[in-house]
Image (cartoon, rainbow, N blue to C red; front, side):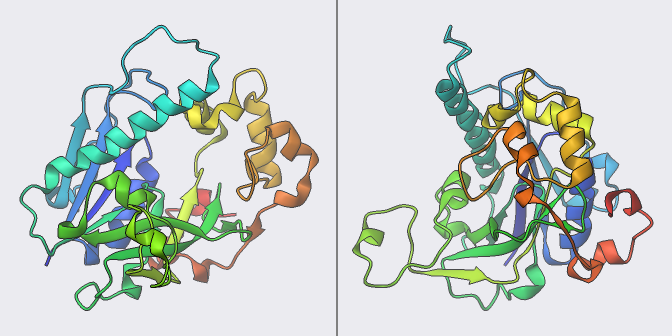
Length: 294
């Protein structure tokens, strides 16, 4: 049985290096899929090079999605719903392109999918003994720095299953984050609700937005799912304000709010946590990550 860790990439070199080091002892292959376009459809350069990670180079498979799945139509650029729908198409196309690299995998091999800033805690599950169809990792959410936590919610990012059960990567990503009772009839008619699910309670970490304010602005402007960060309402100083004051971008428990709303409501403040809650690799390499610790 082999374990394939799969993810997508934009420009998150810090997170990829951490991911490789944390998961190396548990994973046989790392599959990294990159596209030649952003989520908003802008052309981009290829930023990932496995030679930047010589320790893991032999384990890395780098895929490049060349073609934008969204046709270049003359739609209204102000139509937010269309822009978001197109962004989702691009995200799902990039994720599902990973399937291409699994043709030679055994049916009992494991596929783990996460966004690259979601790192599963694989020491908390014995994959060889697991009997459940789907594994869901319940993760702690961190913002801007490795030790700034947002404790209001649990994050269900990384998910895993055997190759024989995998329909596509988007299916795995979108499965519901809970185990349904056996008497739930709706599970018989749903591709996203399952009885045979195991939730890993201490399932790892989601290190979101570990970027400079300049990088964050570029990220938001290139992602239609973050249209609340348009160039008129949220200039660089707004992002700098939130990072400095440890405010999250929006209320994850509700619809996304504008930066101005959050600026007035201080209830979304991050909490500094002890480094013992972080991956061992970070704790053993504090000098490397000193700029990313509060």
